[in-house]
Image 1: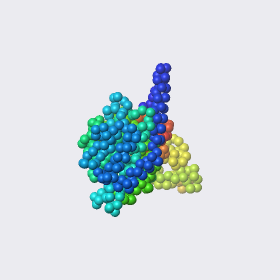
Image 2: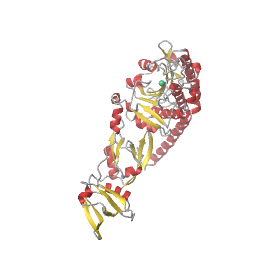
Image 3: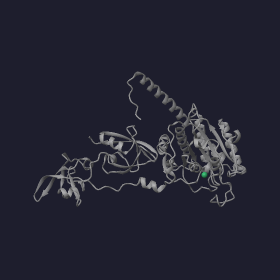
Length: 510
Ligand SMILES: [Zn+2]
């Protein structure tokens, strides 16, 4: 929303104080964000993926030791215990334990709402035929799976503690046990929640964030709440990761038991690799800088969720949506037919002259009497200067229009004026789009017309338009109205793979 200029003096003062307040909040957030450091993440991964924890199998001696290490970290941070009887532990199935700690919210109205940020800390121990690709009988340290996610969550905790005051909503940090056995820990918690489940507004899960390659992070779950992709993309402004918003939502990690109970979820993952569920998933292979970036992204998202209003609402439709629906929504439109129906080139002898090299049968140019070899002098009452500007002009003029050509007739050249009825309506921007009920106020480009202002500005199919000159718009019709009345530079905030950028389109005069 764009802020209006204040005429009333007090309005100005209040506005100024508001701006100063925003700067203060912004700087604390920045300090917190930058407190997330690869070196800290490395320390935790090196500890958790050490042989001394014997692969952290749920309920085992090594698993217990890892749980103890995590409870110690929460204690060191001064987090409020959020497990059984005032401890950090929630015990189940004998010796399995979830490790739980809380940062209480600071807003009296919203502190009873919770963001759950978690990662499983167990792995597969020495491996079995069910849990390992082998070889079996040797320690599987699970550095990426999921010491990396645990270290990322620990870094997020530290960042929240670096803020000058706790966030508005409460945040429950959870390290789940028994994930590799079948999501035991998160299933146990959702069946026996330690805070009211209907007050959990979001579950953020990190599973394998230690092998970032080519900046690509898979973000699952953005369809589970309205506006979530937009929120995640805004959270990515500082981290600039290439986000793959997968529509798949499988019961393959601890977000799923929450999703099954209609809690919106987000799951961060840097992808599978050859070391997955093998003893070679070792600490020295971890990309710590990459894990730092994913952890910073998680913090930015959790921060926004903990402060922002309204919280994204669960989308029941996400239960039935899948990758094929994504294909449908993002499918490019087939190219539309030409308005004129010619091929053009600069003349080989005189590059200032534009010659028709082809006139397609049955299309407007042929119908108007244009022929191959004609030289175009004027189009729509303006001199023809070069091929690109002419092609753009053809898209934009009203129909019918006029064309002046020079045609070689036997010995002499003749100038001829013709009237021509163009196909299709004139366009200003040169895009088509689809709307997405999961992301109201967003347009997904399904077509970018060649030689249009949109193409010249660099817009691409599947780009999402979020704002026009800093302003949101309600729907496609509102956007269309803006385009119809705008002339000159039109700055669009677009999102491509979770990265926001401003693209300025040069619209023709009205
Ligand atoms: Zn895992």
